[in-house]
Length: 266
Image 1 (tube, rainbow, N blue to C red):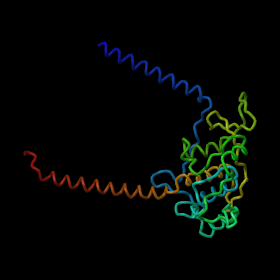
Image 2 (image 1 turned 120 degrees about the vertical axis):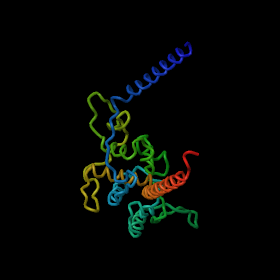
Image 3 (image 1 turned 180 degrees about the horizontal axis):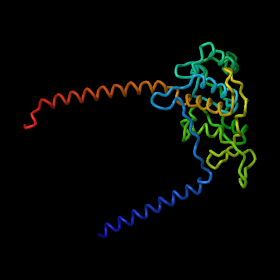
Image 4 (image 1 turned 135 degrees about the vertical axis):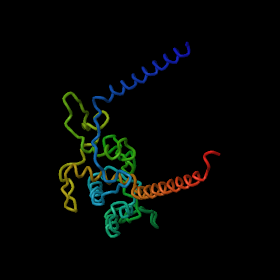
């Protein structure tokens, strides 16, 4: 009886501690945390696939808007032409790479030099090192975008929400210089100004470059960059699922046939 009372008391104290911690979390974030926007992404689900046109537009947004601050160190230009990605033609990939000046070397005289990019080159970083990037951005480090979607809770919906979440700060909210209000950031404060504005990009395919469209396209591109093998994994997953279903059916029928020969009275 004494042990039961002790156990009951322990559970009660534990529940109080959990409730207290949850209340602290709500105090810290409750008034600031907003539910993320949800988009019906084409690449989600067991058979999801990337929208090729959206991937190509998303790369254009990254190149013309995001690449001035954010690197994508895990991507090479040749990846833009691979199956499952934007699938630019070989000629287009070569042209994209050649439009970038890459520092190379040393040459025979020991000097560094610049040359047109090649498809095998990694995406060029806008800054030579982290300290340079922080100095150019008011002390804030612009994160590498290669795996940004996987590194943030909420994934694609989080990236899209942040891009769409810039607003005027509500009354009573004080922002420091160089800090902006974003209702989907924890604390609602971000050191990056809104990167998108109407028609900041002129899409080569003629699509209307609204803020919403650009946010969806660049989020789709970043989702592919984080998981370039996603479509192949989905195909493999479907094949494995079909195999397991067939195998399970064969095992069931075999076992049923075997047990049917056994006399239940034995």
